[in-house]
Structure formats: C-alpha cells, structure tokens
Length: 419
Image 1 (tube, rainbow, N blue to C red):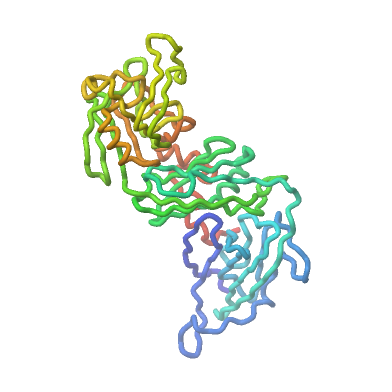
Image 2 (cartoon, rainbow, N blue to C red):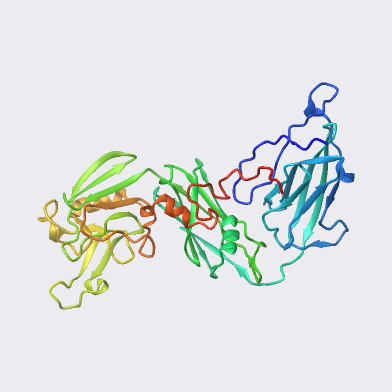
C-alpha cells in the first residue's frame, strides 16, 4: 500500500471545508486518470456517526472516518444544510480523517468521502446524518456593527456579545464562527476588546468602493459546557472614497485628502494648553447640523472663567467624550495662527459647512503635532488604527500570541498531518 498521497492545497476561511484532494493515478480506457468512474467505497471505510434511521449524532463528539488496508482517504467534505463546512485533518498516510471544528446541534450533515485503492482507482461514499438538540437552552447572540450602509474606509467592524466569554478556547470557537468577507478581498483579524466586545479590521484601511459582509456561523455550535451559539443578524457595508483629514496642530492647518489627492487646506484652531487635542487617528462617529455644547460635559464647572454653553453648527464627532470638528466663528482671528479651543478643531462657518458636506461616517480624521495625549485605542470612539498590527494580531484568540503567523481563518491549514 502506498502511504504517500498526493494532495492539493485548499484555501480556508472561517469554518471552511476540509477538502484534501489527491491526484488520482488510476487510468481509464481513454488514458485520462480523472475520467474513471468512482467505485462504491462503503466497504472500505468506517464512520463513527449514526447509520440507523432516526438515530442522532452527538454534536459534542468529533467525526472520525477511517479506511481499511485496501485503500486510503484522499478527500473529505463535510457540510450542513445551511452551507457551513466542517474543518478537519487528514492523516499523512490517508488512513484517518477527523473533524477539528465543532458540529452544530439540530443540523443535517452530508459527508462526501473520496478514496483510492492500491491500484489508484478512485472510490466515493456519501454519508448523511442528523445531530441532536443542544443540552442547554443558553444561547450566545452577536450584534454586529455598524448598521448596514455606506461608510469611510476607516470604519471597523464590531461584534457585541450578549454574554461574556473569558475562556481562551471558547473565544477561539466564537472567533472561528464570526465571518467577514470583503470584495476586493483583504486579510484582517478580530481583536478582543473585552469579554463581550470584538473589533475587526484589516492591516491597512479598507479598499475603496469595497463590499464587506459580516455574519455569524455560530447558530447551534457548542461554545462551552452550557453555552451554545444562537442566531445573529448579518450586516453588509460598502466603502466610498478614501477620505483623510489631517490636522497639524503646530501649523494650525487641516489638509483634506481624497484618494491620496490633496483637495483643500483649511486654517484651524485646536486645543489650547490644558485642553490639548488628542493626537492620532480617529474615525468619524456621527454628524449633526447643530449641537448644544456645554463645558460641564468635559468637567468645567458652570460659571467658571472657562465655562461655556452655546449652540455649535456643522459638527463632525470623532470621540464620545466630546471632540468634534466644527464651526467656530468666535475664533476666526486665531484660526491658522494659534490654538485656543477646549479640545475641538474649529474653523470658519464656510469651511465647516464645506467639511461637513465632504466628510462621512467611517472617514479618517488624524491629528499630529499636538501636545495632547494619544487617542484612546478603545472606549472613546474608534482608535483602532493606532494599534500596531502585531499587537492587534495578539488580540485574536486564533493566533496564539504569534502575530507573524496566519490565523486559523486565514491560513491554508488543511494540509495532511501525521496523527
């Protein structure tokens, strides 16, 4: 028996098929080895799942398929009725295949097993079975963000869990089940912000005019002893042009870029000493024509010399703590010359109206050369892009703390392995 099957590489995504194909060596009458009709491999393989009608498989147990000495396994495809594939590993000698990702509860599976005998003739067997209901009714629901719509290329994807997940192995199950697909395709990674929140981003900004779809494949998947995945609503976003607004607090000027092309330069004022504007990359959170701004919201006592309470127009918000790019007609004389604000970026009414019309949620607003502290990575808006990519990858439960290695969702991990 030949113990060296020839394999083809299959590119994987989250919960991708465990297809490990072999070059078929049997020759048909026309000389094409791939044209031979597969024989029925039922007599050469063994399956640990149920074969009797009405009997259900335990979704907690992995699938295992073995072959006798008359052949070897060359390919296994396991898929449920919703289209989700089961990941697995094939022994280097083709004698055994077992699943490496969990099965879903209350699901119907079809498993196609391809084999090869000692003469190289191809065989095939299709197995079907159903899994039992989950032992617990406790479900994990995921809420994705942002809402479906168009955003700038800096918009991260968020996943809010309705229950905390602390265990690393359970986090890995959750992360494998959260699928992000983009057209054009880019490599990205999830980052566990907390036990109940994940963010997803590529290494660089999203491509322009891309379509990004986000969904959960966790429905019916066992996450922990008493926790199973529930249903979650998918999200689809598109991106527009690459808009970047870069403010240099030292020169008091904002430069507006569209797809790398400089479009406009605007004189501005940023935070004065003690209220210095945050440095770093921020993402536009929301826009409003009018906001009532009060000093008490940033810790300035009403009635003090620094207090204020006034209507402000053409407001682009970049932090939840109250940092905006907005119209500041009261400081026009300082714009382009000095920093006199309480932390926001101020400009004239006309420039603010132009900026408001050309900026969008998810666009990039960056501040450099300010004496303020660095934009928070999380919790005060989206400072995600300030996190170094190596550090970001360490925030994934699938990279095992090795930022330079592909995650399970990105790697071609379906190679035969000696078991």
